[in-house]
Image (cartoon, rainbow, N blue to C red; front, side, top):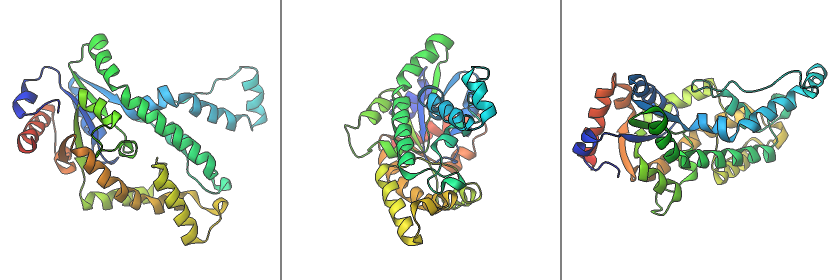
Length: 286
């Protein structure tokens, strides 16, 4: 690991960390807290995906919808209006809107083949964004004089890497430059995440094999044709099994770094507390 003891961590003049785990367990919360201190650079993988790797897809999708409206079509064809996404660290909705949900087009769903195509675009975008980490570490120091660096990953990182493979190219690259930190939830966190998702189902990205199996099982259990599927019903049905599917994959990744509990992250109130938590965890797990 980049830091093998509490002493190495405390003495490091350049601290470089990467958070991973399910969305909603505090990755962005602690990243924002550290960034607010003034000497941590916050690299958001989801923001990088939306601005660098999927920005054109997102904009073109919005334009395709606008072109269906005669008034807007005329203005677009004459270059009289401009359409773009207002994506920020706190508003990643344009990425989710592009990913979409599979099911009945009349209810806003995507045909399954188009959905799979966008899922693959997202997979490639996330892998590229993860592999940009070293570049942003250098950029943060070179341009902005930030001594410390946070890579804030999306919940789907575990879908594209194999923690049990010592030759995994993405994990090897990330572990070279950052201390990987798994923010681990318990059963109570899982129940709360499911409750939140049920109230507000949002698009997700899935490993292709998991998606295909889930889609076929859902069609069989509900006796639905693909174009009859209610998009929200499918992703609600899939969410709990997606959580269960990801847990062993996160656990395999944890061997590349350290593990902290989501409750410990939630209890942090300042960067000093965070430094102490990582030092103590390195002492116990190192």
